[in-house]
Length: 298
Image 1 (cartoon, rainbow, N blue to C red):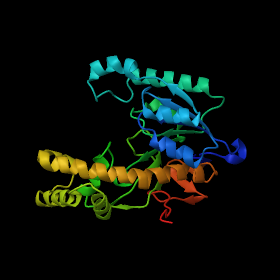
Image 2 (tube, one colour):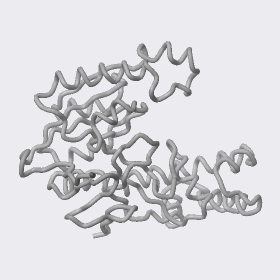
Image 3 (cartoon, rainbow, N blue to C red):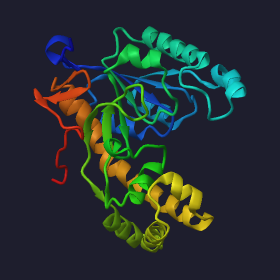
Image 4 (cartoon, helix red, strand yellow):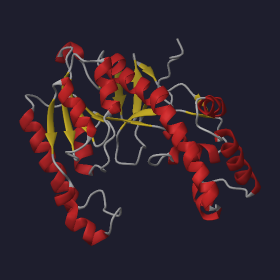
């Protein structure tokens, strides 16, 4: 029988959460989480000891744990090939078990939340099962509609599907790729108005590129990213990347940086989010599959 449980219960655990942020790059999502909720206990873990996020952690005076993945995965890279290392291979498991050992040694209690904040490694089934449903992530795309992928790919999928706007999604991490139960989605970022504004401040020809992409998609009957990649030419592909990177940068600020801190500090920290199986509840109300939405325009 499935039992409903709060992701975090402040009545039992107190108002200070122990939050472990996993980072690999700039640390901007981590920075925004802390800015909106500085009065929690943070630890920052990174697989890339040289990354900028660790400098942000030092500025915040947060504990850090650094463990490079390179030596752990060296043999797996030779065995499977670059970019083809299975999520559950023994080398990944050894790495994550050592990472968890180091994190546990640095904490006085079990983490209340693990926030993936620009972390670039896959997680093993062992790790996800250990912490589910307390691993949270944000994705610059609508995961309900399947706009998955890294970097500029989610925006490209949305454009190919004929969307006129983009949304960020915050979700509980499960064993799939950006397939976990959705907690919240951002307000829409409307594509053409955003590109028009970006063009006004110096990013030239964005609208022309966007229109040429649309014409190419329509003329060639493109309906998927695979079809686009198979049938495109270097010029159109370059235009798609430029347009989508611009959109993703805008969505990060207008979407990720708003909903990720909101979900953590206004919903989870106040004991407002519960889960039963894969069903999410906010304030005891069943959420639709697209999660919680709030108007941030004011």
